[in-house]
Image (cartoon, rainbow, N blue to C red):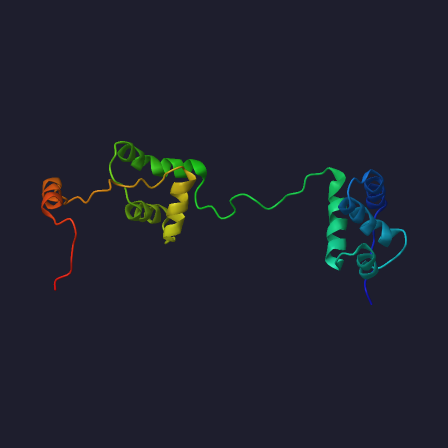
Length: 169
């Protein structure tokens, strides 16, 4: 046998107020999902059938009405698994900031090794990438020419190469 539902008078009053002020069908369904159970004594299955929603939606609507009382509830969000505070991260990255602003090339492996050393335990490399991204560090592409390229030889090749290449016969 299903357990009986205990709906408080405050919830019923909020549902009546929402029913009277409803501007859309979804707001009306939300109010009726409480009122059908509280005033008519229907179970959630019958209320869901009448409203054309699922049983879970009836419970969800009731929870939404219950949470309209104005008190703030703790919600999920934020950094629950942080390894350092934002200030500690800034201080950690400050040792590389001077060389980065001077135009020197920085790579992630040495930063990651220093992070692992500071934390005292192994962490994935993605942690270092997320740390850099969180503080606005980004990848800067190097110049588009090869470091061993010879511009003189390239121009000479352009001048002396045939205009149309044909495979050897």
